[in-house]
Image (cartoon, rainbow, N blue to C red):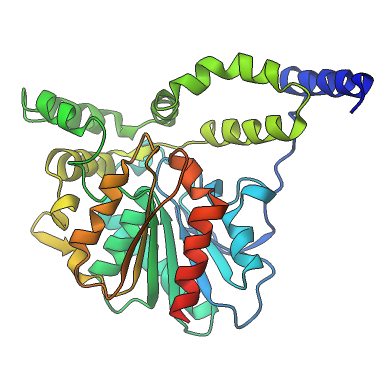
Length: 344
């Protein structure tokens, strides 16, 4: 690129980032809405063949569902289509104060089972492969454990926290909670009706504070690199779209996971009901990230000790951040492709 072209590109990018509409418009993979009930919109990505096996993408709460389809070269949905599979997505939408009574049960007993059955029916009754990221992976595993009659063929959990004894900051939070038995946080979340999107976005950025501090220098250094700025803009769009947590769900997460580590002990207790990960009977792929600042790799690997009913539990690692391991084509996507092919 000539000096004149470089200057022109830099000027165009600077304008796009400051006064314009951005470097690159979103380009989602075409999809068809199969059902659009609140907090359970189900989409089928277009282009799969009638006999291609179904993969249901399960996002976490407090993350936009388009995490699986950020841009054409960072889209697990497109990768699955290109590898001969039929990807589907369940989208929970925005979480508001009116949703404060939604808890783990809502997803484990209602939203995810309904989506799994719908996807299976759309594929002629064939079983479904689940792929969940972060808490989405935990929800997928707990859903399979809670109802063995669901048409599930396998579960892949990427960056899923399966032991809070290994999570960053959990021990410190427990020490603080001992001062009042955790009641202050529980009461505050109940009064607020949950954790707002603004708090979620601030907390997510805090895990990558160096990225925020280095952002001006990064932009200046790459002002003529349109592709790099487009990827940065995609991450910004993702962070700016993070939703919140319902009050009941977060209080269960706080009490049962962070304080008591139910999941690390092999499941989840909801009142008198106990859901055991040992009841998962499908093959499982776990992917952890040694550089993940949100879910420690050891917290993911712990699932190899608790998923005792599965005939095949694989654990792999991928480089990158919490979101980065989901986008890792050469590792996570390669592991997933092999795992699903081995099931055929």
